[in-house]
Amino acid sequence: MAAMKTADIRAMTPDQMDDAIASLKKERFNLRFQRATGQLENTSRLREARRDIARIKTIAAQKRDAKK
Image (cartoon, rainbow, N blue to C red; front, side, top):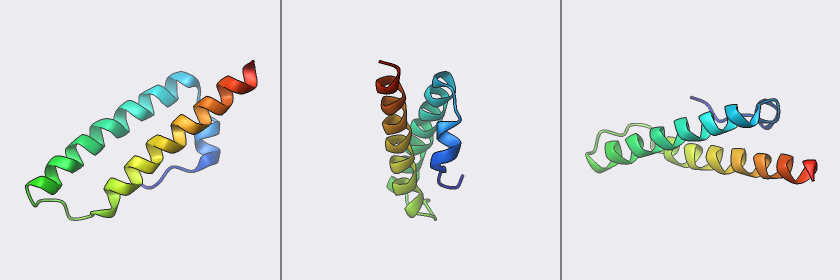
C-alpha cells in the first residue's frame, strides 16, 4: 500500500477513517513482527504506516474542529 494522499483522506467519512486507522494499525503490528524475525524486506513501510496513521488522525481532528 502506498502512502495515502491528503485529498483521498479528506474525502473519507469518519467511519472510513476509523476503518483505515484500524487497518494501518494491524499492518504496522504485522510489520513489527516481520522486522523482529528478520523477514521484513521494505523497512521504510513501517515509517509510512506510522505517518499515514498520524495523517488520518490529524485530518479527522481538523474535521471535528470545523464542525464546532
